[in-house]
Each structure stands twice: as structure tokens, then as C-alpha cells.
Length: 312
Image (cartoon, helix red, strand yellow):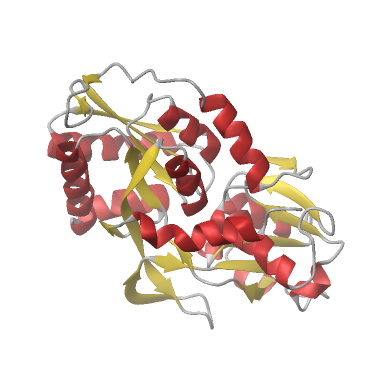
């Protein structure tokens, strides 16, 4: 899925999200509020946006429902959303309890009082030389600019006037960090390049291979997600530049959730990541290898980056 990016920015998307969320104080109706906060009683609702093609992800998510339900002793409903602003909207309207949010979407939700960070995901590090996996679990990653191997693009400066595959404007690796890198290179990501928005980092890479765009920005190294379908992707493409470190995705909870349920959910996700079967399930969904406790201050750098890409 793709669409043209016409002057969209984090600020504009955030405004739309807030407008959609404003004034809605309805809870999801599956629990009750107390002095200690909201506690679900019938079903815990979890939502995420796929980082790869959404086809069949509903089926892949079903085992996560089962694992969470076993550990929490409550029915769990895992759903797939089309974009992160929709997840933020759902958390603001209290129709979901837990959201898998990337850093920028989390900051948007948190600053409006809709969500608190609970966990950060862990992934194996990436060898910058060849994109291979290291044996170290880390809570941050980078974004990359990928071009065809025979492209005349050798630097970020060469991207001026080119067509670039982005993700949505709240995607850290798919837009925000790359946009800041372009600005550092003297290129306005809104006006000096032709941005095309894709849903899924794999879709952006496939568009590059098909000649639809001149470059694609993805998390490092998203080429691993399509190597079975395109075994020569490493020979056909190369990385022009990497961004600075980005905090890993969050598991965030609605802001009124009780501490008791925050602890239960955190323990459940950490246990799932430590179990071989559970780790495979979360890897299939989101390329996560586990989880660790997090705190809001870890995302101050995200707020700094959001300010950097605001247009005057």
C-alpha cells in the first residue's frame, strides 16, 4: 500500500490525531475504574501496526492472544491497525488497553495524557558492515537510506529531487529520523524530495527493487525481511547512510490503567520474551526478541527530534 506524501509532517498528523481524540472520555466497557485506576475484567484489548505486509498477520497474532490470556487469566483480543495515529486515537478513546507504539507515536499519546510507556522491545543488534545479526540484545536501532547498487546516489545530498519511499509521518525509522538527517544535509524533506508513503518497510524496499522510487528509508536492516522472496536483495541494493540511534518500539498502556495491571502486563510480556515459543511469536509479529522495563525519560530524545523536523 502506498500514497503520496503531500506536505505531511509529524505536527500535522499529531493535530489530526488530537482532533479525533478530543473530548472522548468513554472507557472500553470491559472493566471498571477505582481509586487505583482502571482494571479490565472481561477482555484485555491489544493493538499494533505491522512493520511488514499486513496479510495474514491476524492469524499470526492469534498465538499472542493465547499466551497473554494464559498469563493474565483474562481473555485477550489482539487486533491490527492500519497506522499509528489510529492506535493513538484508540488509546485516547479508551477502546484499547495496550498499544505497540513506536517512539514518536508514544510521545504524542503520552503528551496528551492517553498512554504511558511500560516496556521497550529488545532486538539483536545489526552489524553495520554486512547487515548480519549480532548476539547482543539492544533497546535501540538505526534507520537507513537504501538505494539500488547501480544508483548514482552516493550521499544524502544526492537525494535532492529524488523520489523516496517513507512510512507514515509518526514513524521514527520510516520518517522522523531520516527527515532530520535530510535537514542536516540541507534538504527539506517536504519540498526538496518527492515523498511516497508506504505501509510496511518491506513494501518500501520492494518498491525500490521495482524501480518505483529512487531510495527507501527503513529500519536497519529491513532487507532481512524480504530476503526469502528476493534472495539477491543484498547484491541489488546498498546503504547510503545511517541515522543516529532510535529508541526501540514501546509496549504502552492507557494512562488510567491500574498499577496492578501494569505489573501483570509487564511480567507477562517479559515472560513471553524469555520463552522460546513466545519469543518466536513476538518475532513473527514485530521482529521483537524480548522486552525490558522502560520509563518516559528514555524518550526525551524523541521529543528533541520532533522539534527538529517541525517546519517554520
